[in-house]
Image (cartoon, rainbow, N blue to C red; front, side, top):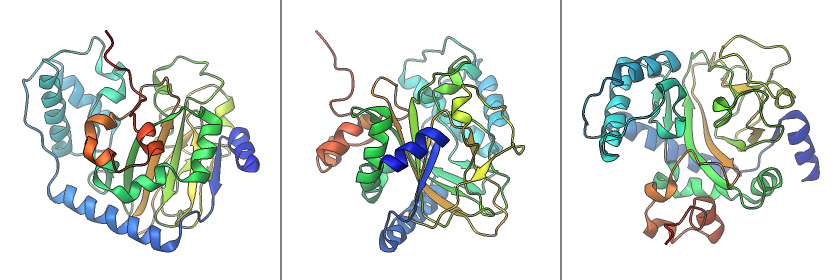
Length: 305
């Protein structure tokens, strides 16, 4: 464990090979495929809300930030309007580009429909929940973020064939902070590989040591000096610090590359996902004490007084 922690802190990332047995990888892959098919065939389309003057700026922000088609732009706008109505049509006090991404609905279909993400995965897949508290990974995460850290988000992704990859970035909430960035990590991202990650199929790319620069990368897909691909067999897990520069790679193959992402944050950082609103108490009662805490039970502000 000490060697893995040293690599993570020195390089900004570490890869642990073949943590999961093949049977578990196969089961998780089947579940993810089924969920993705269901959500493609029957996407979540919330009831609508009132149109507001800011909606066109939101649509432009989505078009400029993500490789999505107009149907996905409209689906996200409907969800934003619906959530806004639930919040009594309370507007954001800043321009859309400055809004905290934890407040936004984000694409499920991107790369113009070739790639897909499943949000709120733990409400849909109990098998994925075991990854959140996997002992080797959780010990490593707690060594970096503290024993009281919590889960910020859990999702599944499929990077489609013949796709161009993503832009270089650091993770939420660092995008909202001015440089120099903090000299310690606020979050860690853990990517469980359901397929082999290779140079050709879109393996995540990182710039070793970039977490020490205390800077954010330019939002570009261009190659960077020193970048490496996080290649490993299916069942492996890649972990990187929030301030490590990274992007999804180009998938030059005719097959998709699938993964499950478990994103952790320090206890005093607002999580990306509100699990207690997305997972029923009945379902949570079947989780371990450790998992319940990670999801926010006894780790959220109470109503005082």
